[in-house]
Length: 590
Image (cartoon, rainbow, N blue to C red; front, top):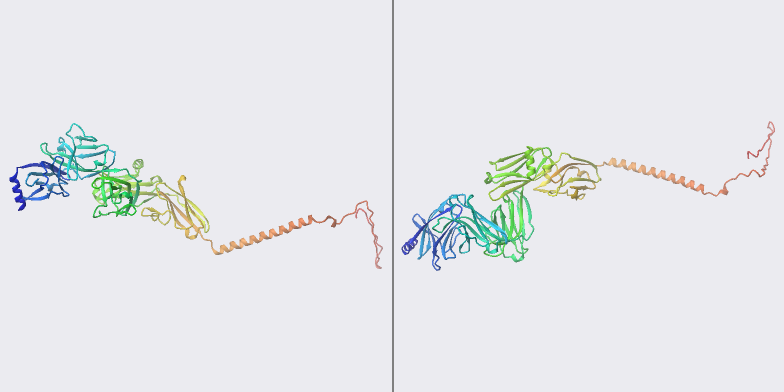
C-alpha cells in the first residue's frame, strides 16, 4: 500500500513519459532517461505485476539491474541477460522528481549471446566483433564502457571522425560490426557493451554482447604441457613474485577467439571439479581439475591481478592441457579402432581425426580408413586397416565448436611382425636394441601382453633388476638394453620400443648339477694331462741341456794312427782242448 501511495503521489507531481524498449534473449538493454540523477534523492526501478508496482532496486545495484549516472548527470538503467520472461512494464525515476514508464519486449534471436573475455598485452591491438539482428542494418551501432558507477559511450558508427586509437566499422552484409583499439593501455581494461540504437528519437539501446577486456603483461615463465587421461586428475602449479602475495590469483582458459575466467582465489566457494589454492609461503598457487573430460583440454593461463577493482592482470605462465585416451595397440598388417567419446551436447558438431593432413589423406585415398559417428552412444570411432609401422604415432580426435576446438589425443602403437628369439645360458650377458622415437616414451618391460606395459599412459622404461641397464643412442634411433649375469627367471616375453614395439622371446637355460660335475671332471683331466706333458717336456729339455754342457775330457778317445799299439795276451790251455788256439790283432780293427 505504501508503494501505491508513493507512486500515486509521484504521478501527480510530474508528467510521465512512456518509451518502448526492445531486447534480445541472452543480451541486455540500456536505457538513457535523459533525466537528471538528482543526488540526495532516491532513484528506483519498479516492475508492474498484476497491476501492482513492485520495487526491484532503490539506490543500489543487483546482478541483473544497475542504475548509473552518466557523465552528463543523467540516470541510466542497465538490465543484463534478459529473457522473454522479463518482458513487461517498468518504471524508472527519482522519487519526488520525475518518472518514466518503459515497455520492455524481449525477442528470441541468435544474434545475441553470452559475454566474452578478451585478453591482450599492453601495446597490442584488440578487436571486438558484435553480431546484430538483420532488423538493425540501418540503425546506429555503439560501444559503451561500464564503470563502477556509470556507463560511458566510447564510440558509435554515426560519426564522421574516429576517436584516437579507436575505430568502428559496420559490415552490413554479414550483420556484424567491429571495434578496434590500437596500442592498448592499462586504462583500456574493463567491461565493454556492444549495442544498437533501437529508436532514433530515444536513447534506448539493445545490448548485444558484453566484452571483458583484460590487459596483461607478457608471460614471465616458460609454458608447460600437462598430459592426463580422461577420468584422472590434472594438476598444475604457477609461481609468482613475492610482490603479489596478497593479490588475487586467477586461471583463464583460451578459446578460439576469447579468453574465459575459469577460477580465482577471491571466491567463497570452489567450482565443480576445480580447486585453486594459494601457498603464500612458497609463492605458488596450484589448480586441480578432477575427473577430467575431453572438454577440459586446452590452453590455460596463470595470472595475478595487478590492480584491485580493475581488469589488469600479469600472466605468469601458460599451461597446455592435453587429454589422452589410453594407448591403442595394433599388429603390423592388422587393423585397429580408435574410439573418441564426446559430450552428448556436441553430437551435432563437426568431428574429425587428425594426425597430419598428409597422413590422413593418404589413408583415405588408400581406402584404409573409415569413420563412424554413433550419436546415440556419443562415440566417434575411426577404423584403420592394413597397419604399417608408419601409421604409429599420436592421433587427435577434434570436435569443432563455434569459438573453440576440443582435442582428445590417442597414441597408436604398432607391434611389428618380426619377433626376436634369444637363447642364452645362465651367467651369460646379453644386449638388445629397441627402436625409439624422440616424441614418445621408451618402453621396455616383461609381460605376457603389451597392454600390461603401459599403465595409465605411462610407460615402464625398465625392469626393476640390478642386472638391467639402458643406454640411449639418439643419433641411431635406438636404445640398448643390457642384461648381465642372466638367470633362469629372466626367461619370458619382453616388449621394447616406443611407438613401434618389438616382441622378444628370451630363453635362459639352467645348467644341471651332473653336467657341472662332468664338466669339472673333464676340466680336471685336461689340466692333469697338460701338467704331465709339461713335466715330461721339462725333463727332456733338462737332460738335453745337461748332456750338452758335460766336460769333454771325461769321454774315451781313440789313439792316433801313428802310435804303436801293444797288447799282452795270456792263454791257458785246458787239458780237454782239441787243439791250440791262435789270436791275431789287426791295427785297423783296433
